[in-house]
Image 1 (cartoon, rainbow, N blue to C red):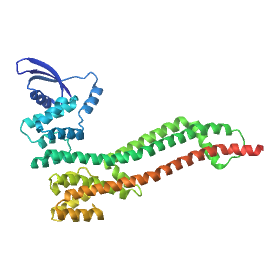
Image 2: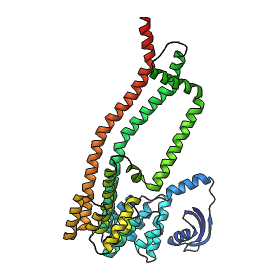
Image 3: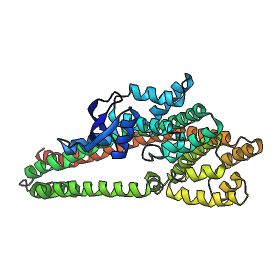
Image 4: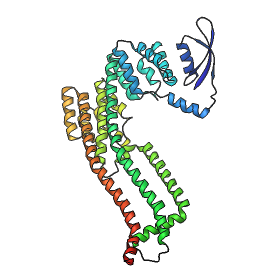
Length: 400
């Protein structure tokens, strides 16, 4: 929100300014951080309400990875935490990000812990991030913890990037093939149906079926196409609801042949997150509590059951094995980590092993799937064309 403020400066001059803040309390905090004494604070009325709300939503977002990278660079350069945040505030031009940084600075100057200040903005700083900062405050090693989090985000983005890049070409191919087939059935077939309608000759039953469909579209296209578009919109809405409720993993796991691969992807993310937290000095039970909020509901129930076994005294490897949270290879690595006292590092290495396996499977799958998809689209388009021209071939044979 934007607020119009009248404030008294330290040299007893009245100043007027406009600031972006979450609420009036936040606005007062920002004014106080600038050394001003606010006298009047009123919410500004936007000239274009819809666009203003849209911009406010965009400005209120913070790139957590970029923020961590910049903060780490400044801390490594020898600046204190307050000095680093002040430097970030001075170079930032986005009003929403400036408001976030100003709130962090105000909290630190009031003597509160950095983790407590971050926890006041849960929409921007997730529990995972707050957890590693809390652990870093106990060891006085915030730069190292930030480095672990940056590496964690980069590895997650690497796996996500592989999946996205591997799906771009098949999606384009499918969209083009669907468009060509739709054009043939919706435009070309009805035209051929009109040509053959008065020929009086018998046609192959497949051609007759295709042309009958063309005649139906020609007569009822004004009803069929809007209904088809409405059906697609409803299907997209239903898919969006399912993804919002259950997540992509719960849907893809129902596809035959994908259940085992989705399980590997989920275990990779689980191990990578747990490994980062354990290396940061967080206890096993506290790390599992933090991770429960970012895994799928199906995996969350198993993780809760494993946590109860760990709280009763069982080692993590045995608890994970009893609830299907590891493979034979990762089970051996977890046992080694427990014996050597480097469980966090072994979890991270297990995640790296899984990431390599996922990457190899994606490459093999796409090398097989792309030619098969091209062949299917080619067969469908070719069948439509052949069925359209079969009556012409039959007519030419009769004339000869």
